[in-house]
Length: 62
Image (cartoon, rainbow, N blue to C red; front, side):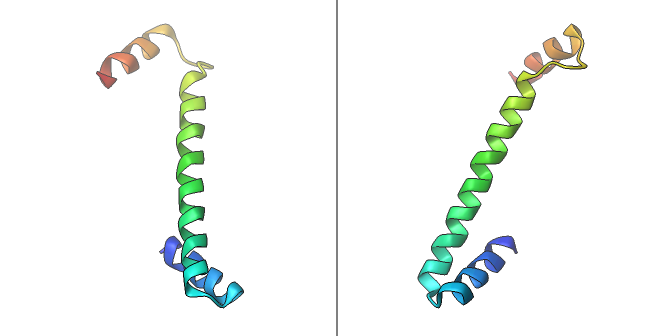
């Protein structure tokens, strides 16, 4: 839904369907990359966690 809406907004703003589609794809890729980076940063911060929680989380990823 978000991809379609961004493509529509891009199309209305530029008058080009191709440009609107590219804008929607770029927006989606930027959002995905930022989400992954955000999650990795917060996963590396151990505020409020005890040592057993971190050990259990590492073990469950294997």
